[in-house]
Length: 317
Image (cartoon, rainbow, N blue to C red):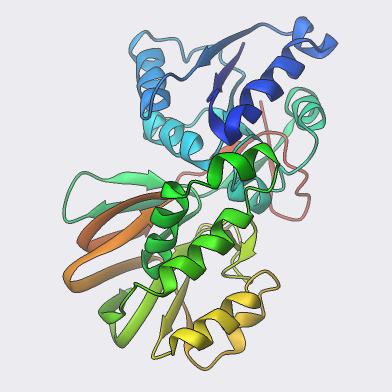
């Protein structure tokens, strides 16, 4: 049986329209399935918890999420340490997980691969613990500083619903980074990578990622790969506001890493600390903390429907 979790408001209704089209397909009518629509923020996580508590994970061939990266984040945290075959049909504004795991395609084509392919893409999540609170998972990236301010401005933008409706959701982040630029003030941040301490003065942002993409297609860490051993980490520090604009012009091509104010690090465990509370974002969800600890999860997810044929794959038994 396949279980669908759909966020009907993602992408200004795009996810709901995608599921409607899939549900009318001949292939959908051939499979055993059940679907759930989320009704509020956090509901996807609750739905997965409920399925687990009712012992309904047995016999599930795949859990299919239709929505944005935030919906997937909730589902992943609902699963916790459970590793069901999982897929994602992008219906949000950013859809960076779909880019990173090669799931950007026409929805019906993704659905066909989910059902017909036996090979899966192993995907290693990150774990994070903010201010010594309970450990949670992240799918794409964790960003501290300016990164998180961009997310906050994007979420609060009056243009977001309109751009999503016009299928131009990625432009939200471009507008947001310019607006956030004029009010954000950099600070000193300590980054500890596998026990080695780095102090960055006038630090604008630290981003820790599982794959290259961020903010609706920006190649924030162009050399990041889906693998079990380490995160890719980007640090931007000691840079002027006007040069930040020049830097972000090149982010979509990944050329920003040549700037002398950009450092690229790698580590399996990362701790980011600030003297004061600072904004951070996890898979596009924004909050504040003073320190955050990140580590690689050892047990990979099995991603269904990926076009990726270069990463190691395993087969569904």
